Image (cartoon, rainbow, N blue to C red; front, top):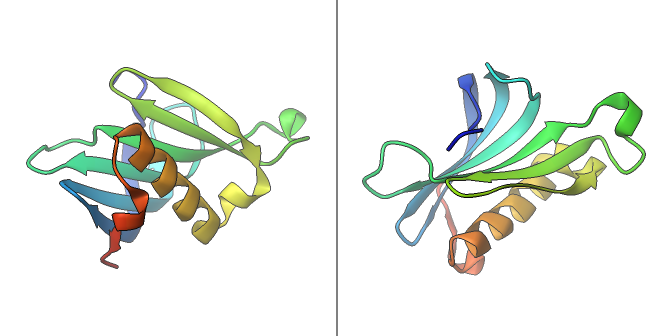
Length: 118
């Protein structure tokens, strides 16, 4: 994953289980890359040490905030894509719902089957 987030420290805010994936929502992220992450949702396949997919809310530069302060970005092994901007992605509940839905669909999973652990 070429552009994966370079997480130095982060605080887990929520954990989920969906099929054979452990999913962690991270906040208060200190990243070594050029992006300022508000939240990251990491999908880790069972038995794997690293996430296969990230869905993140990154800060939009002030000059580009006409559509929102936070940009959704998906980063996986074979993809990286921006999915639009919105102020809502800076709110934990709104981000969690949208990111879980997007990530699950990309991985071919049913987001309705996600079990929240914490």
